[in-house]
Image (cartoon, rainbow, N blue to C red; front, side):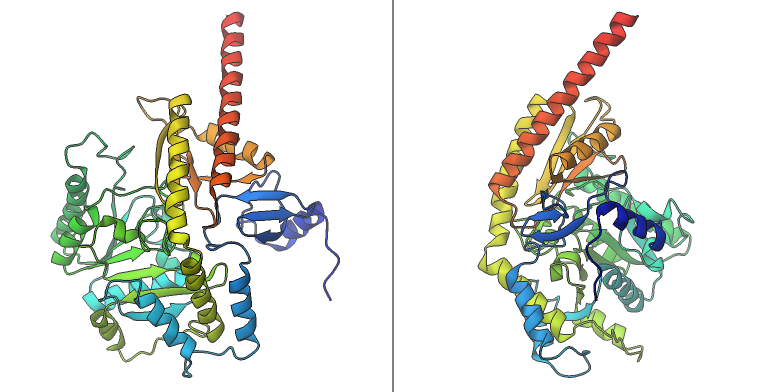
Length: 451
Protein backbone atom coordinates (compact mmCIF):
# COMPACT_ATOMS: atom_id res chain seq x y z
CA UNK A 1 0.00 0.00 0.00
CA UNK A 2 1.35 3.41 -0.98
CA UNK A 3 1.93 5.97 1.78
CA UNK A 4 0.03 9.25 1.68
CA UNK A 5 1.61 11.90 -0.49
CA UNK A 6 4.38 13.70 1.37
CA UNK A 7 5.05 17.38 1.34
CA UNK A 8 7.99 18.58 -0.73
CA UNK A 9 10.36 19.02 2.22
CA UNK A 10 9.76 15.46 3.50
CA UNK A 11 10.34 14.05 0.02
CA UNK A 12 13.59 16.01 -0.27
CA UNK A 13 14.75 14.80 3.15
CA UNK A 14 14.07 11.16 2.21
CA UNK A 15 15.84 11.62 -1.11
CA UNK A 16 18.89 13.05 0.61
CA UNK A 17 18.84 10.11 3.01
CA UNK A 18 18.31 7.31 0.49
CA UNK A 19 19.46 8.40 -2.97
CA UNK A 20 23.11 8.80 -3.96
CA UNK A 21 24.30 12.40 -3.81
CA UNK A 22 25.79 12.11 -7.31
CA UNK A 23 22.20 12.01 -8.61
CA UNK A 24 21.52 15.72 -8.99
CA UNK A 25 18.26 17.67 -8.93
CA UNK A 26 17.20 20.54 -11.14
CA UNK A 27 17.19 23.76 -9.09
CA UNK A 28 18.95 21.99 -6.20
CA UNK A 29 18.63 25.04 -3.91
CA UNK A 30 14.84 24.97 -4.34
CA UNK A 31 13.80 21.79 -6.18
CA UNK A 32 10.39 21.34 -7.78
CA UNK A 33 8.25 18.34 -6.81
CA UNK A 34 6.47 17.15 -9.95
CA UNK A 35 3.50 14.82 -9.47
CA UNK A 36 1.76 14.91 -12.86
CA UNK A 37 2.33 15.90 -16.48
CA UNK A 38 0.30 16.20 -19.66
CA UNK A 39 1.41 17.38 -23.08
CA UNK A 40 3.99 20.15 -22.65
CA UNK A 41 2.97 20.91 -19.08
CA UNK A 42 4.10 19.57 -15.69
CA UNK A 43 2.34 20.04 -12.35
CA UNK A 44 3.72 20.26 -8.84
CA UNK A 45 2.16 18.95 -5.63
CA UNK A 46 0.14 22.14 -5.27
CA UNK A 47 -1.31 21.87 -8.77
CA UNK A 48 0.79 24.69 -10.22
CA UNK A 49 1.40 24.36 -13.96
CA UNK A 50 4.91 24.61 -15.42
CA UNK A 51 5.72 24.92 -19.13
CA UNK A 52 8.30 22.26 -19.98
CA UNK A 53 10.86 23.58 -22.48
CA UNK A 54 13.55 20.92 -22.00
CA UNK A 55 12.02 17.44 -21.85
CA UNK A 56 12.85 15.91 -25.22
CA UNK A 57 12.21 12.46 -23.73
CA UNK A 58 8.44 13.09 -23.59
CA UNK A 59 8.68 13.52 -27.34
CA UNK A 60 5.01 13.51 -28.36
CA UNK A 61 3.90 15.00 -25.05
CA UNK A 62 3.86 13.80 -21.47
CA UNK A 63 1.49 10.87 -20.87
CA UNK A 64 0.14 10.92 -24.43
CA UNK A 65 -3.10 8.87 -24.28
CA UNK A 66 -2.27 6.83 -27.40
CA UNK A 67 1.11 5.81 -25.99
CA UNK A 68 -0.34 5.03 -22.56
CA UNK A 69 -3.10 2.95 -24.19
CA UNK A 70 -0.64 0.97 -26.33
CA UNK A 71 1.46 0.11 -23.27
CA UNK A 72 -1.57 -0.87 -21.20
CA UNK A 73 -3.18 -3.04 -23.86
CA UNK A 74 0.02 -4.96 -24.67
CA UNK A 75 0.84 -5.38 -20.97
CA UNK A 76 -2.50 -7.15 -20.52
CA UNK A 77 -1.63 -9.73 -23.16
CA UNK A 78 2.10 -10.51 -23.15
CA UNK A 79 5.50 -9.12 -22.23
CA UNK A 80 8.47 -11.39 -22.76
CA UNK A 81 11.90 -11.42 -24.39
CA UNK A 82 12.76 -11.40 -28.08
CA UNK A 83 13.72 -15.08 -28.31
CA UNK A 84 10.11 -15.81 -29.24
CA UNK A 85 8.53 -14.73 -32.51
CA UNK A 86 6.29 -11.70 -32.13
CA UNK A 87 4.86 -9.33 -34.73
CA UNK A 88 5.51 -6.17 -32.68
CA UNK A 89 9.26 -6.61 -33.02
CA UNK A 90 9.33 -6.99 -36.79
CA UNK A 91 6.55 -4.45 -37.35
CA UNK A 92 8.50 -1.87 -35.39
CA UNK A 93 11.77 -2.62 -37.19
CA UNK A 94 9.96 -2.27 -40.52
CA UNK A 95 8.43 1.08 -39.53
CA UNK A 96 11.83 2.42 -38.45
CA UNK A 97 13.46 1.15 -41.66
CA UNK A 98 10.93 3.18 -43.68
CA UNK A 99 12.33 6.38 -42.12
CA UNK A 100 16.00 5.60 -42.82
CA UNK A 101 18.24 5.29 -45.88
CA UNK A 102 17.94 1.85 -47.46
CA UNK A 103 21.35 0.57 -46.41
CA UNK A 104 20.53 1.04 -42.69
CA UNK A 105 18.36 -2.04 -42.62
CA UNK A 106 19.37 -4.13 -39.59
CA UNK A 107 18.12 -3.30 -36.09
CA UNK A 108 18.97 -4.11 -32.49
CA UNK A 109 16.66 -3.06 -29.67
CA UNK A 110 17.80 -2.08 -26.21
CA UNK A 111 16.68 -0.14 -23.13
CA UNK A 112 18.69 3.09 -23.10
CA UNK A 113 20.77 5.38 -25.24
CA UNK A 114 23.85 4.37 -23.27
CA UNK A 115 23.26 0.72 -24.14
CA UNK A 116 22.79 1.67 -27.79
CA UNK A 117 26.02 3.66 -27.97
CA UNK A 118 27.95 0.91 -26.18
CA UNK A 119 26.69 -1.63 -28.73
CA UNK A 120 27.57 0.69 -31.62
CA UNK A 121 31.12 0.96 -30.28
CA UNK A 122 31.39 -2.83 -30.03
CA UNK A 123 30.12 -3.22 -33.59
CA UNK A 124 32.57 -0.67 -34.97
CA UNK A 125 35.51 -2.41 -33.35
CA UNK A 126 34.40 -5.85 -34.46
CA UNK A 127 33.80 -4.72 -38.04
CA UNK A 128 37.01 -2.71 -38.48
CA UNK A 129 39.28 -4.76 -36.17
CA UNK A 130 40.53 -1.38 -34.96
CA UNK A 131 40.40 0.12 -31.46
CA UNK A 132 40.60 3.92 -31.50
CA UNK A 133 37.72 6.40 -31.56
CA UNK A 134 37.48 10.04 -32.64
CA UNK A 135 34.91 12.17 -30.82
CA UNK A 136 33.99 15.84 -30.76
CA UNK A 137 35.07 18.05 -27.89
CA UNK A 138 32.52 18.48 -25.07
CA UNK A 139 30.62 15.40 -26.32
CA UNK A 140 28.52 13.20 -24.06
CA UNK A 141 27.51 9.74 -25.26
CA UNK A 142 26.31 7.99 -22.10
CA UNK A 143 27.04 6.87 -18.55
CA UNK A 144 28.59 3.42 -19.09
CA UNK A 145 32.35 3.14 -18.53
CA UNK A 146 32.94 2.60 -22.25
CA UNK A 147 31.04 5.80 -23.03
CA UNK A 148 32.49 7.96 -20.27
CA UNK A 149 35.80 7.11 -21.95
CA UNK A 150 34.62 8.72 -25.20
CA UNK A 151 32.79 11.65 -23.59
CA UNK A 152 35.10 14.66 -23.00
CA UNK A 153 32.25 16.30 -21.09
CA UNK A 154 32.72 13.58 -18.45
CA UNK A 155 36.24 12.17 -18.67
CA UNK A 156 37.93 15.54 -18.22
CA UNK A 157 36.53 15.57 -14.69
CA UNK A 158 37.51 11.97 -13.99
CA UNK A 159 40.55 9.94 -15.08
CA UNK A 160 41.29 11.95 -18.19
CA UNK A 161 41.65 11.00 -21.84
CA UNK A 162 42.58 7.43 -22.78
CA UNK A 163 45.29 6.96 -25.40
CA UNK A 164 42.81 5.36 -27.79
CA UNK A 165 40.49 8.38 -27.68
CA UNK A 166 41.10 11.34 -30.01
CA UNK A 167 39.22 14.63 -29.61
CA UNK A 168 38.34 16.80 -32.60
CA UNK A 169 37.14 20.40 -32.27
CA UNK A 170 33.38 20.94 -32.31
CA UNK A 171 32.28 22.34 -35.71
CA UNK A 172 30.94 25.46 -34.01
CA UNK A 173 30.90 28.44 -36.35
CA UNK A 174 29.95 30.89 -33.59
CA UNK A 175 32.64 30.42 -30.95
CA UNK A 176 34.76 27.59 -32.34
CA UNK A 177 38.14 27.50 -34.09
CA UNK A 178 36.67 28.44 -37.48
CA UNK A 179 33.82 30.90 -37.31
CA UNK A 180 31.16 32.36 -39.56
CA UNK A 181 33.69 34.64 -41.28
CA UNK A 182 35.98 31.75 -42.29
CA UNK A 183 36.15 31.19 -46.04
CA UNK A 184 35.56 27.43 -45.76
CA UNK A 185 34.80 26.30 -42.20
CA UNK A 186 33.48 22.93 -43.44
CA UNK A 187 36.80 21.89 -44.94
CA UNK A 188 38.78 23.45 -42.10
CA UNK A 189 36.91 21.49 -39.42
CA UNK A 190 37.02 18.27 -41.48
CA UNK A 191 40.76 18.70 -41.96
CA UNK A 192 41.15 18.71 -38.17
CA UNK A 193 39.76 15.16 -38.20
CA UNK A 194 42.05 14.24 -41.08
CA UNK A 195 45.06 15.53 -39.11
CA UNK A 196 44.02 13.46 -36.06
CA UNK A 197 43.85 10.32 -38.22
CA UNK A 198 47.29 11.02 -39.69
CA UNK A 199 48.81 11.59 -36.24
CA UNK A 200 47.24 8.37 -34.94
CA UNK A 201 48.64 6.41 -37.88
CA UNK A 202 52.12 7.79 -37.22
CA UNK A 203 51.88 6.29 -33.73
CA UNK A 204 50.79 2.94 -35.14
CA UNK A 205 47.20 3.36 -34.01
CA UNK A 206 44.10 2.58 -36.10
CA UNK A 207 40.73 4.27 -36.00
CA UNK A 208 37.56 2.19 -35.50
CA UNK A 209 34.99 5.00 -35.54
CA UNK A 210 34.19 8.66 -35.70
CA UNK A 211 31.46 8.99 -33.08
CA UNK A 212 29.36 12.16 -33.08
CA UNK A 213 25.97 13.51 -32.08
CA UNK A 214 24.24 14.63 -35.27
CA UNK A 215 23.66 17.93 -33.46
CA UNK A 216 25.95 18.34 -30.43
CA UNK A 217 23.68 19.08 -27.48
CA UNK A 218 25.75 19.18 -24.29
CA UNK A 219 28.38 20.99 -26.39
CA UNK A 220 26.01 23.96 -26.66
CA UNK A 221 23.17 23.20 -29.11
CA UNK A 222 25.55 23.23 -32.08
CA UNK A 223 24.44 23.01 -35.73
CA UNK A 224 27.39 21.62 -37.76
CA UNK A 225 27.73 23.31 -41.14
CA UNK A 226 26.21 21.30 -44.00
CA UNK A 227 28.79 19.17 -45.76
CA UNK A 228 30.97 18.66 -42.68
CA UNK A 229 29.88 15.06 -42.07
CA UNK A 230 30.43 14.14 -45.73
CA UNK A 231 34.02 15.36 -45.67
CA UNK A 232 34.68 13.71 -42.30
CA UNK A 233 33.18 10.44 -43.54
CA UNK A 234 35.53 10.54 -46.52
CA UNK A 235 38.58 10.74 -44.24
CA UNK A 236 37.14 8.20 -41.79
CA UNK A 237 36.30 5.61 -44.44
CA UNK A 238 39.70 6.02 -46.06
CA UNK A 239 41.18 5.10 -42.67
CA UNK A 240 39.07 1.93 -42.55
CA UNK A 241 36.75 3.30 -39.86
CA UNK A 242 32.99 3.78 -39.63
CA UNK A 243 30.83 6.84 -38.97
CA UNK A 244 28.44 6.56 -36.02
CA UNK A 245 25.64 9.14 -35.79
CA UNK A 246 24.24 9.53 -32.28
CA UNK A 247 20.59 10.61 -32.71
CA UNK A 248 19.64 9.98 -29.10
CA UNK A 249 18.86 13.64 -28.35
CA UNK A 250 17.68 14.86 -31.73
CA UNK A 251 15.96 12.16 -33.79
CA UNK A 252 12.32 11.43 -34.65
CA UNK A 253 11.40 14.65 -36.44
CA UNK A 254 12.63 17.14 -33.87
CA UNK A 255 14.67 19.12 -36.41
CA UNK A 256 11.52 19.75 -38.45
CA UNK A 257 12.77 19.59 -42.02
CA UNK A 258 13.88 15.97 -41.65
CA UNK A 259 13.09 12.93 -39.54
CA UNK A 260 16.74 12.42 -38.57
CA UNK A 261 19.16 15.21 -37.73
CA UNK A 262 21.99 13.67 -39.78
CA UNK A 263 19.83 14.32 -42.85
CA UNK A 264 20.41 18.06 -42.38
CA UNK A 265 23.84 17.44 -43.89
CA UNK A 266 22.34 16.46 -47.25
CA UNK A 267 21.03 13.41 -49.09
CA UNK A 268 24.54 12.29 -50.01
CA UNK A 269 25.47 11.59 -46.38
CA UNK A 270 24.56 8.25 -44.79
CA UNK A 271 26.14 7.10 -41.51
CA UNK A 272 27.27 3.50 -41.07
CA UNK A 273 25.56 3.17 -37.69
CA UNK A 274 22.75 5.22 -36.13
CA UNK A 275 21.85 5.11 -32.45
CA UNK A 276 18.47 6.12 -31.00
CA UNK A 277 17.09 6.60 -27.49
CA UNK A 278 15.33 9.15 -25.24
CA UNK A 279 12.34 10.27 -27.43
CA UNK A 280 11.96 6.85 -29.07
CA UNK A 281 9.68 5.58 -26.26
CA UNK A 282 8.22 8.87 -24.98
CA UNK A 283 9.56 8.12 -21.50
CA UNK A 284 9.51 4.32 -21.70
CA UNK A 285 13.00 2.73 -21.58
CA UNK A 286 13.62 1.93 -25.23
CA UNK A 287 16.57 2.37 -27.58
CA UNK A 288 17.80 1.11 -30.93
CA UNK A 289 20.86 0.65 -33.11
CA UNK A 290 20.43 0.65 -36.89
CA UNK A 291 23.24 -0.45 -39.16
CA UNK A 292 24.16 -2.11 -42.42
CA UNK A 293 23.99 -5.83 -43.23
CA UNK A 294 27.78 -5.91 -43.58
CA UNK A 295 28.43 -4.53 -40.10
CA UNK A 296 25.71 -6.72 -38.57
CA UNK A 297 27.17 -9.85 -40.18
CA UNK A 298 30.67 -9.00 -38.97
CA UNK A 299 29.27 -8.55 -35.46
CA UNK A 300 27.55 -11.96 -35.65
CA UNK A 301 30.68 -13.63 -37.05
CA UNK A 302 32.20 -13.85 -33.57
CA UNK A 303 29.70 -16.60 -32.81
CA UNK A 304 28.80 -14.81 -29.58
CA UNK A 305 25.07 -14.22 -29.28
CA UNK A 306 23.77 -10.71 -28.64
CA UNK A 307 20.89 -10.97 -26.19
CA UNK A 308 19.20 -8.18 -24.28
CA UNK A 309 16.65 -9.39 -21.72
CA UNK A 310 14.21 -6.52 -22.19
CA UNK A 311 15.30 -5.13 -25.55
CA UNK A 312 12.62 -5.51 -28.20
CA UNK A 313 9.97 -6.86 -25.83
CA UNK A 314 6.34 -6.65 -27.09
CA UNK A 315 5.37 -3.80 -24.76
CA UNK A 316 8.38 -1.65 -25.70
CA UNK A 317 7.74 -2.23 -29.39
CA UNK A 318 4.04 -1.42 -29.01
CA UNK A 319 5.04 1.85 -27.38
CA UNK A 320 7.59 2.59 -30.10
CA UNK A 321 4.95 1.98 -32.77
CA UNK A 322 2.50 4.25 -30.96
CA UNK A 323 5.07 7.07 -30.84
CA UNK A 324 5.60 6.78 -34.61
CA UNK A 325 1.83 6.77 -35.13
CA UNK A 326 1.39 9.95 -33.09
CA UNK A 327 4.24 11.75 -34.89
CA UNK A 328 2.52 10.92 -38.18
CA UNK A 329 -1.11 11.45 -37.12
CA UNK A 330 -0.47 14.79 -35.41
CA UNK A 331 2.02 16.00 -38.07
CA UNK A 332 4.56 16.72 -35.34
CA UNK A 333 7.55 16.95 -37.66
CA UNK A 334 5.95 19.80 -39.64
CA UNK A 335 4.71 21.28 -36.37
CA UNK A 336 8.29 21.28 -35.01
CA UNK A 337 9.49 23.12 -38.11
CA UNK A 338 6.74 25.76 -37.97
CA UNK A 339 6.91 26.41 -34.22
CA UNK A 340 10.71 26.22 -34.23
CA UNK A 341 10.94 28.78 -37.03
CA UNK A 342 8.57 31.06 -35.12
CA UNK A 343 10.56 30.68 -31.89
CA UNK A 344 13.84 31.39 -33.71
CA UNK A 345 12.30 34.48 -35.33
CA UNK A 346 11.17 35.82 -31.95
CA UNK A 347 14.58 35.23 -30.40
CA UNK A 348 16.38 36.89 -33.31
CA UNK A 349 14.18 39.94 -32.80
CA UNK A 350 15.02 39.83 -29.10
CA UNK A 351 18.73 39.63 -29.97
CA UNK A 352 18.53 43.13 -31.50
CA UNK A 353 17.07 44.49 -28.26
CA UNK A 354 19.28 42.66 -25.75
CA UNK A 355 23.06 42.59 -26.40
CA UNK A 356 23.45 39.70 -23.94
CA UNK A 357 22.04 37.44 -26.68
CA UNK A 358 25.04 36.67 -28.85
CA UNK A 359 23.67 33.95 -31.10
CA UNK A 360 20.42 32.16 -31.86
CA UNK A 361 20.82 28.83 -33.62
CA UNK A 362 18.83 25.71 -34.19
CA UNK A 363 16.59 23.58 -36.35
CA UNK A 364 12.98 22.77 -35.58
CA UNK A 365 12.50 22.40 -31.84
CA UNK A 366 16.23 22.07 -31.13
CA UNK A 367 17.33 25.63 -30.38
CA UNK A 368 20.19 27.29 -28.51
CA UNK A 369 20.32 30.90 -27.33
CA UNK A 370 23.94 31.81 -26.56
CA UNK A 371 24.26 34.41 -23.80
CA UNK A 372 27.46 36.50 -23.78
CA UNK A 373 29.12 39.20 -21.69
CA UNK A 374 30.59 41.06 -24.65
CA UNK A 375 30.18 41.04 -28.44
CA UNK A 376 33.91 41.11 -29.26
CA UNK A 377 35.19 38.20 -27.15
CA UNK A 378 31.84 36.39 -26.89
CA UNK A 379 32.64 35.57 -23.27
CA UNK A 380 30.02 33.17 -21.87
CA UNK A 381 27.52 34.90 -19.57
CA UNK A 382 27.42 31.96 -17.18
CA UNK A 383 26.16 33.69 -14.04
CA UNK A 384 23.56 35.65 -15.98
CA UNK A 385 22.29 32.47 -17.64
CA UNK A 386 21.97 30.73 -14.27
CA UNK A 387 20.10 33.72 -12.82
CA UNK A 388 17.73 33.77 -15.80
CA UNK A 389 16.97 30.04 -15.48
CA UNK A 390 16.16 30.51 -11.79
CA UNK A 391 13.88 33.47 -12.50
CA UNK A 392 12.11 31.54 -15.27
CA UNK A 393 11.34 28.76 -12.82
CA UNK A 394 9.67 31.36 -10.61
CA UNK A 395 7.57 32.25 -13.67
CA UNK A 396 6.64 28.55 -14.06
CA UNK A 397 8.85 27.95 -17.09
CA UNK A 398 11.30 25.03 -16.93
CA UNK A 399 14.47 25.67 -18.93
CA UNK A 400 18.16 24.80 -18.50
CA UNK A 401 21.57 25.61 -19.92
CA UNK A 402 24.26 23.71 -21.80
CA UNK A 403 27.62 24.33 -23.41
CA UNK A 404 31.12 24.39 -21.88
CA UNK A 405 30.30 27.76 -20.34
CA UNK A 406 26.82 26.72 -19.17
CA UNK A 407 25.58 29.85 -20.92
CA UNK A 408 23.45 28.46 -23.76
CA UNK A 409 19.72 28.33 -23.12
CA UNK A 410 18.60 24.99 -24.54
CA UNK A 411 15.16 24.44 -25.99
CA UNK A 412 14.16 20.81 -26.55
CA UNK A 413 10.50 20.79 -25.49
CA UNK A 414 7.89 18.10 -26.12
CA UNK A 415 6.92 18.31 -29.78
CA UNK A 416 3.40 19.55 -28.94
CA UNK A 417 4.94 22.84 -27.71
CA UNK A 418 2.98 25.45 -29.65
CA UNK A 419 3.06 29.04 -30.95
CA UNK A 420 1.39 30.42 -27.82
CA UNK A 421 3.98 28.67 -25.65
CA UNK A 422 6.77 30.12 -27.77
CA UNK A 423 5.43 33.66 -27.45
CA UNK A 424 4.89 33.27 -23.70
CA UNK A 425 8.48 32.11 -23.18
CA UNK A 426 10.05 34.84 -25.31
CA UNK A 427 7.88 37.59 -23.78
CA UNK A 428 8.87 36.39 -20.31
CA UNK A 429 12.58 36.26 -21.18
CA UNK A 430 12.30 39.73 -22.70
CA UNK A 431 10.85 41.07 -19.46
CA UNK A 432 13.42 39.33 -17.27
CA UNK A 433 16.37 40.47 -19.40
CA UNK A 434 15.04 44.03 -19.24
CA UNK A 435 14.90 43.76 -15.44
CA UNK A 436 18.47 42.40 -15.37
CA UNK A 437 19.73 45.24 -17.56
CA UNK A 438 18.03 47.86 -15.38
CA UNK A 439 19.52 46.34 -12.23
CA UNK A 440 22.97 46.36 -13.83
CA UNK A 441 22.53 49.99 -14.88
CA UNK A 442 21.54 50.99 -11.33
CA UNK A 443 24.54 49.12 -9.91
CA UNK A 444 26.85 50.90 -12.37
CA UNK A 445 25.38 54.27 -11.36
CA UNK A 446 25.82 53.48 -7.65
CA UNK A 447 29.39 52.39 -8.25
CA UNK A 448 30.14 55.59 -10.20
CA UNK A 449 28.65 57.78 -7.47
CA UNK A 450 30.63 56.03 -4.72
CA UNK A 451 33.89 56.71 -6.52
